[in-house]
Length: 312
Image (cartoon, rainbow, N blue to C red; front, side, top):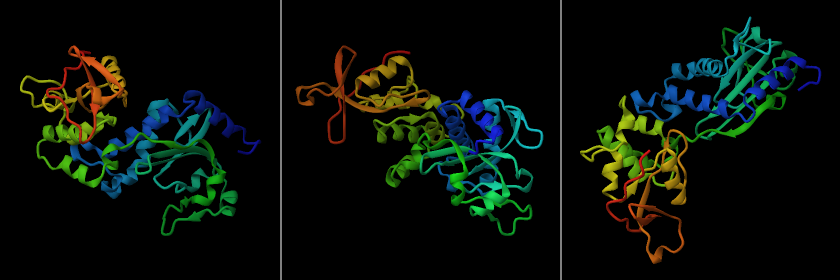
C-alpha cells in the first residue's frame, strides 16, 4: 500500500475494526457457497455442479451478503461506501482472476477469493490504477464487450491483504472419498442417507448443512433427533453403539471427555462407544448411564445399545 493512499488505509482500518480476525468474513463466504449449492433442494455439494449462470451470479451474492453482514452503505458510484469512500467488490474463484470494469479504474476494489476444494479464502484491497496494473501484467479479456480487465497472479503483490490464504470451513461432502460419498447418496430415503452419514463419518465435525443436503427435507434437523419409532439418527444408531453429540454444552462436554473433536455451533460428531475395559488403557472416557464409556475405532467392538446423551 502506498503511504500516500490515505483512502485505502481508512477503508482497511474500518474493515479490520469490524472484523479483526476475519471470522465474520469467512462465515459469509461459507454461507454464500452453500447458498449457491442449495443442497436442501438439489443435493449438490461441489462448485463444479453449478450451472454457468449460477457461477456468474456468485459475485453478486458475495457482494450482497457482505453488505448485509457488515451493513456497508450503498456507494455513490461503486458497490459500497466504507468510511465515506467508494469501494467496488469483486469476487473470483481464481486467485487473482478478478474482473475490473473501466468505471472502477482509479477506485478502491475489495477483491475476494474463495476455493472450496482448497478450503482457503483471501480478501484484500487494491487501487485499480490502469497504468500500474498494466505494467504488472494486467490482461484484457478477449471478446469482452464491456472491455473489462482481468487481473492475473502477477498482480497479487499489488493487493493489500486484509486476510490471505485463511482456512475456509471444510465442505465435508466434497472432501470425503468417493466410496463413502457414493454410499451416503445411495439410499433413496433422506432419513437413511442421514443415518448412513453418522454411521460412516465418525469423529469428525459434521455441519448441519451436510445433514440438510443429504436429507433434502425442510425439517432436516428432525432427521437427527430422538423419536419413539427409533428410525431417526440418534435412536437408530444408539442401537448400533453410536452416540451423536450436538452443540449444546452437555453434549460438547461428552465429546470432549471422549477425546473430541468437539462440535461447534450447528455441528454434530458421531462416536462408536464401548464400556471402558482394562484393554482400553487410559484413553479418554465419559460417565453416562452409570458406566464409563470410551470411543472405539475401526476393528473394535462397540457395546449395544449406546447410552443416552444428557438432555439439553
